Length: 581
Image (cartoon, rainbow, N blue to C red; front, side, top):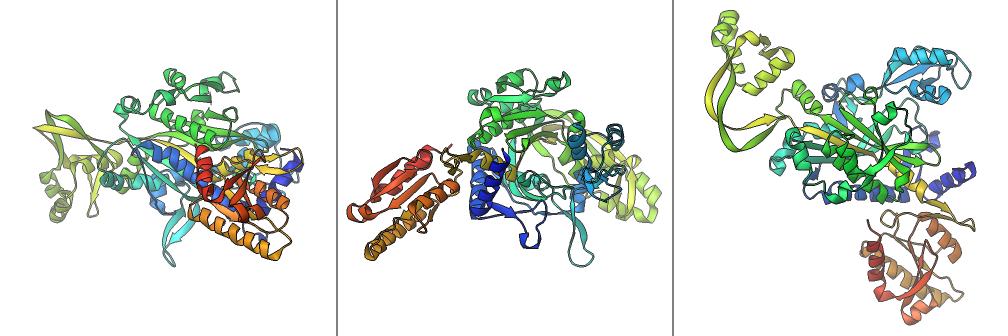
């Protein structure tokens, strides 16, 4: 996007109430934005379209929940975020400015260092002579900076907590409650949309990198042993034929820089996507992003190399969209998280987050049960033995096994019981099922990044210099606008205005998002409605009060048609529905 066009674009976003920097009267804060009336409507429309693709059209396969933003420390310790959710930073030894090391190296030396160790990053800085871009000062030794926002839960000296960096952990910790609520079944997806916080080192590029933003996320739980079989019930020919552009690791290692385009079935057959459920959600995600008005050639998936993946992921693909201003922008990530998260939370919380997988028919087998060795406990703990035994007998065999496997001991009443204080009992029994830890795939979208690419792709400038936001009708903040035509005769103008207001209220009552404008010439009002991206502008004029008709102007063609007022709501509804994805 040319600089002149970029300035016009940003001016429009501010003047038409899409967004502006937060706390601007105090100088603003990097990485924080306010969303105005039009921006909020646009965000909500993107959310609803995401819900349509990932929840409503999944035929009971996905449910939505809401969990808190503030997260206890132990939750993010168990998930690995407290140890791994960091970025490498360096400080200019001359001016004291702090930089995110990987971004600085990429911009200064053209080298990608994502996933490299601090020592490797330091070596590249030294070898390439990377300096402070402001004053040329030398840089400090790289170190990790934790991206979690810290807080305290409770007044004074409360419990340490963090603002959640993702919505996922609330869905993992609520997994058993959701299972109980929906009737103990797999596969099941748990979706959540909400605010998250990441204390970015150097927020930049507007909505592309923020400190507070909204995530639309889905954790999809399934039985790994039945993954291929069950997913094929949902991977219809329509989805298998969806064309994806993927730059996968074998291509990257071979030096190929351009993605390969092929139907999803080809990538599955070649083993490019290791899990069929992951492939399923990538196809859904492709359809969703295209429905935002982004052409297929401007979208591709890039597989992350092993050292680039998050600590919990066995395979990850980023979904990228091309931006005229910022190049390729990651708008979503698709991760195969295996059973990492549930096992981590079971280890820390000692809760049972397994799923009981029932067999079609009970089978005869040997039931193994871990029980305390009463004799050895009484012998070694003497007067404490009755209390220890009372507590340990309250614990399930499954819990005892998990605790011994994870920690090497079971702790009760302040006493640590190692493996020698337990014995395994076996007996013949009818076995009705087994407990499994489900695997998970996760599609995760950044709402504000999606909003940015929608705004950029919708922005257009006509040959006469007029700016038009060509939103998909489903995404347009306002679907209609009502304009009374100004006349010189006061009494006639009043009748036109009263009729226009009546039409405006009728459309609102019919759930058609509409705005009303009587200021300025009709030409200026059309300009304003084009900048709002209003698909259908309705003009009420003198003829309207005489024959009961109004004019509908079409945003993209500027053509106009007259329709009867009593048919307007039905006509608009038909036009809007015809353009819904």
